[in-house]
Structure formats: structure tokens, C-alpha cells
Length: 316
Image 1 (spheres, rainbow, N blue to C red):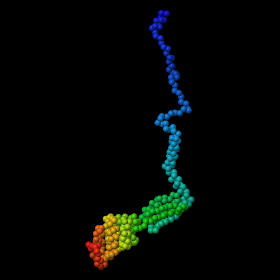
Image 2: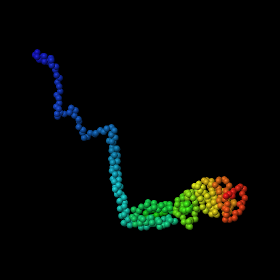
Image 3: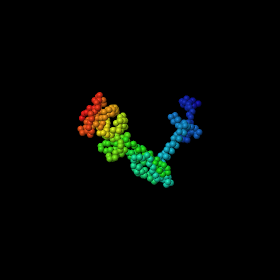
Image 4: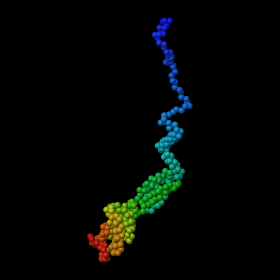
């Protein structure tokens, strides 16, 4: 008893310890619960919008469109559409749909054979394969042609509709004569021995001011039949040449019309033309008309009628 009491007194009582789990084959202390097949997987917050049904449907449609575009792009890269169109055109040509005739409409001045030479390059070609734009581009290289329309008339006719330019004047520059329209576009060369009955304009850039010249001459209709030519001087003003041999130097800009009207009135009253004068100078607006007398006049000059103001000053 005394030994037992001493043992009890010296040795503290142990708490009952939990049994240690076995190291191998022991189950985890907190086992993970397996995910059941009918449970949804939650996405992070910033990817939550991908689960929206509308967005999913749009993504599927977008992928389908990409696949279709890629398919047709592959066909185009392989030139399948062009090959199919060529084969179809050749087949129609063998069935009788080929170019047999060329009809030209609207041609008045230009050589008809030149049009045939261009259109005939498509002769016996299948109608669907005719390059209408190529024919039109080649026709527009002619100065006479302002516009051209080329069309098919099934089963075997090409129709070429021509719009020709209207000649407005003959332009003389550096000794060459060119036929031009009202916009100054060169139509063709002019034979000096067969010049058309059109106004003659002379000088650099004169062809680009035909519209202004037309308005100027219309301001003095009584002088229009007497004007034989016009020279564009210094890219700023006109000299008018009369059929009787005189030259009228006009001022620049808007003053030219007023000067020509004034000269028309003076000529009507005093008959300045065909009296041996060589040149009339009106370049200074408001100043008296200066006239230069020919040293060897074709006709004997007569004394000008009296005027209340010095309309003409005879100066060399």
C-alpha cells in the first residue's frame, strides 16, 4: 500500500490520448465530397457573362459565318468562280450565242472602220465572255469620241453607241492646226488646205478659253460675222482679227466686253473697218481708241467723220 501511494504521488496521471491513425491506408481527416453530375460548375465572376444563353447563340452563329466565309474564300483563291463562268460562257458560245454582228450608232464624222477594228477583236467570241469595258476604254482614246456605250443584243450582236464631240474651233499653236471642242479638247489634226469653216484661235492656252471668247463675241453681234480669228495674248487677254485685215487689241478681264461693245458702236457710226487701219488699241479702259495706219493701205483712206470727242488717235 505504501508503494502504491508513493507511485501515485510521484507519477502524475496521464490523460487518455486519442489513438493515432495509421499512416498507411488511413482515410483523410476531412474527405472531399465528389461532384455529382447534375451539379453546375460555377465560373469566375468576370466570365459569368459567357453563360448567358443569348451570347452562346450569337457565338455559334458567328462561328458558322466564319466557316462559310472561309469556304467561299477558298473557292475564290482557287479561281473556281472564274473557271465556272468561263466554262459556262464557252458552252453558250457553242450553242450559238457568239458575236456575229457589230452595230454602230451615233457616228457622223469619225471613220467607221476604226470602230469595227476594235469591236471585231471580239468576233466569234462567246457573248457572255465579251469584255464590254475593254472595248469602251479603247474607243474613248479617240479624240472624236466623247462617250461610248457597248452592250449585247442577244443572241449574236454587239451594239456600239457613240457620242461624238462637237467641233467648236480650229486651234493654231506652234504652226499646227488642231480641231477642238468647246472645252478645248483636241479632236483631230486639221489639214491646212481643207480647214473647216470654224473660228480660228491662236496662241498657247487659247483652246481653253473658247467659252469666254464666245460670250465676248456675243456681246457685239454686229461684229461677229466680221471676226475671222482671235489670239490669246499673255494668257490674259484677246486680240480680235477681222476678215478685212484689222486687229483689235482688247483689255483684260471683264473690261474686254465693254470695250468691244464700245468699238461696235463707234464702227457703226464711223465705219472704222475697211478704211486702211491696221490695228485698233483699246487695252486701256476708258482711253481713246488708238489706231495704227498701214504704210501701204490697200484702199485709199477717207477722212473720218467728225466726232464730239477724240474717239480715234492715229499713232504708229
